[in-house]
Length: 293
Image 1 (spheres, rainbow, N blue to C red):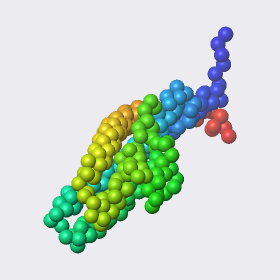
Image 2: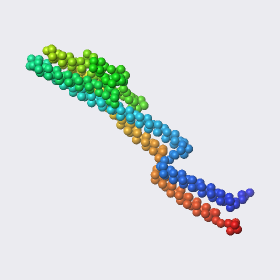
Image 3: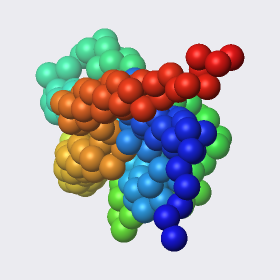
Image 4: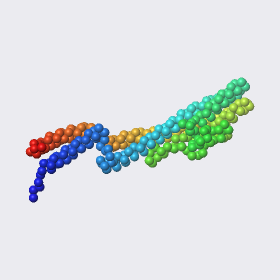
């Protein structure tokens, strides 16, 4: 049986086809404007899932990047402070060598050396209490505000400060002040106090040179360890930069449209729509009923 085709049927079909073509054109225009393949999850459920996965990885990598930057700030501060502390202690050693020449020094000269050593002790204690963003870099997780109090007691709690640089690795970003500067009567500060007291009391300060060398070795060891961790975290930063670029390329491949491709599709659909308009105009030409109205 042949289905009856009426003018109304032809008009309805033509309008439906025309609306479908117009809707596709509008969608392409919207895509070209936004330059995004996915505007709603229903556009591409699989692509949406992939996009969410990549964006989660980007967020995690960005956090690792912030951790690395903060860690580099800590370790740069530690390295610079230990370097300056080593220079101070070398000056202490040089002055101690001068003070050990007991027979050639007058009491005034010894007092001048003692005064200079006191100044260096103050400088060294200031270095040992260096902070980064309000946190002491030589007292671990301590919140005391200083690593060494005026009575030379150490405030470190034993808990170090670490930063996570990837999913499987953390790096210590502080330094052990007790190991670097010593504590209590065995500290570099107490050692300088002893040298000053010996100079003023006329005791030979030469035997203190060995203790100074030991403290210099401890500072250099701490600086070497901090430098190794700084190299590790710098390598992690390079890896994060590379991973960030890779993830962004993946995200763009999933979400972003190719400008050249979308322009071609848009032009093709515009041509199709114009053709649909022309065909519809010919299909819906006036009938006899239009003249009898």
